[in-house]
Image (cartoon, rainbow, N blue to C red; front, side, top):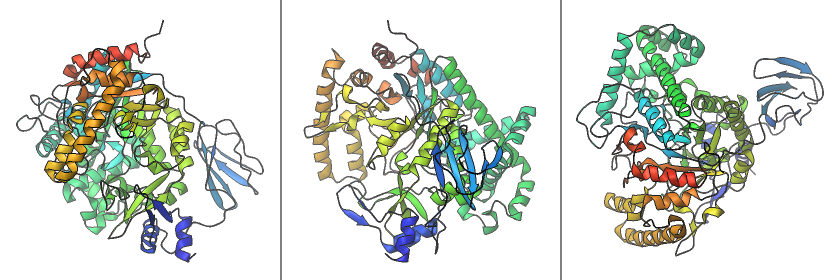
Length: 624
């Protein structure tokens, strides 16, 4: 084994992997070298031997199964410091730093397993689309609160939305919720205003609506200067908020993406950045105020959701990665790998593989800092949610990195048990449910590890079948520790699925050859027939195409949680996002035909609520 091979193996770069077609793909030396450089390990590698492990998982109230061979110093998460020799004491929940023999070991003290939620159901909605074509504008946090109250009145236990991380107001084109600027800050674009720009229509005009919303918010900021509560918020958030707000102000002057800025401004600690922050103090304060308002609005929405009877309230979402030139990487450069992006290996959909253009966590820094970035990202979201979805949780096991340049990608192993422990820790603090999006090619052992942690997986009824013609999994055969739904925002709606709408879209756009589309339509017809047969006894007298037929099937699954999509409650055929497109399809910009009150009053939703109640999915109702 060469020196490069040894260093790559120590850094967790996998030697090879098997793709969907069964072909073994060996990681070439050039890729290994590029990924080592992205980790900051160019010419070096993690040490081969240590006295202490870099991290160890333990449980609250139980002494860690680790005894240093030398005098040790233990610094608990709250700053409490102790010294000793021999066995370690039992510890409380938290991330604690153990030092001995010149080494550091992070003791990750978390419950072994999170409790499963009761049987329940909830509604998924596109936040931006919650204003109708007649209203115009972008849906906001006030619409979210109203929608939560309306769904709660029907018996829903949670209301789910896509990520609401801070985006790029200086670039309205950067509107995808899964390509955020900062995952520990929230999108100001969803703050409520009465402003709607341009002519109302079915598609949100983001280029017009974004500046109009920001101008209206600035006018509000000028008209009613914030008081002592805002000052207290600034003091509590400290330097981290100051850096973020400085980044946002600089973006207005220099452009949305810091990689395009003059070199002096790419470093948040530079004298030029400090001078600019002083010169733009008013703009910096405005962007900090947007965060103050966003957090207040989210707290209000969660309070109204649970106050209306929802068991969990808001069900938020954490994107798998962050934009490599956004606020998160600008202020916290060391936590991320540069020179590589997250992606996916070659498959039938993308024979050359996929590059998602998202900055991955650098596992070296993640471990050295005691998983600080992961913990704070989860903690910030869980302040305003009773449930949290972690996008592409496969990345806790291994992440596919694509080096810059024309090089093939490779998998990088991640510290799974540590990341799961940190997730359980933060969920336990908040008393929340965690859902891990585990769709796609699942590494062996990951789903069992999720189940052992009490982290729910995802099951999509449209995919839960085998053979040809398709035989769909029976409701009683679904796993208990999952959230079940028919599809997701990246897949066809119930109506669109039955029509093969996404097949036609991909054919018409040119993504699918017409001759392939013919076979796909035929397969979809067999899928529809298979699902109709599977739901036959459960739907009773309902016609097979009725959304309630699909709801009846989901309601009877063993899965603790069931999610329904607002699009299906309203008969919408178009899906929110069509993967593989950018400008060819209005991703994330389609309005629903009804606003919160109309959705809550939709007859299909009322019927769905009755079906769910009969299936004992309303925790507020005590069964006789």
